Length: 216
Image (cartoon, rainbow, N blue to C red; front, side, top):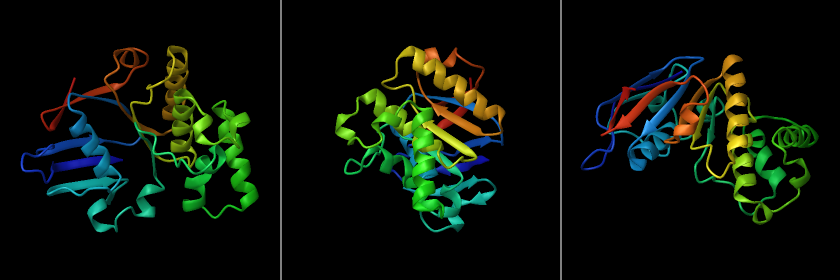
């Protein structure tokens, strides 16, 4: 599902140096990191916000180098929960949750709203659907962030520190929910240094250190 093959990035002193990673379909992986710069670089490469100096990135059997930047063919298959949310401040809660559906599907306006409301209900945010983001707590923004990342029912789900701003009981519920998604066939990658998460469920664990990835 996700493969980094001999990836080296473009910096004078590369953040990633001959990095290899192979996550096959249906795996649930925790990726611990020592450098936030290295972790962010991996996510930028997956999102096609950057390109490597050398090597190949393959998602779902498709080489990213052969597609235009931010290809819909690739991004419809990936759901990403960003550490800094990347929510659109000028749009309300419902508009934020349905944005991926507007971009990647041909649902009618009515179906978009129905799908958005259902997802907000799943994450306890339905009553906030018409709120501006300025009225949400950080915890609510994180729930919206996670909900948006999976609304397209993606094959690959990338979560960058999804526990941030969540209380411990919410983190436990999230991990159990992700475990159910994984059992349903989703490939899930969680970037985190949170030790509590590591002990909640049975991940395959890797560590990103000095530009390379190894098993824990």
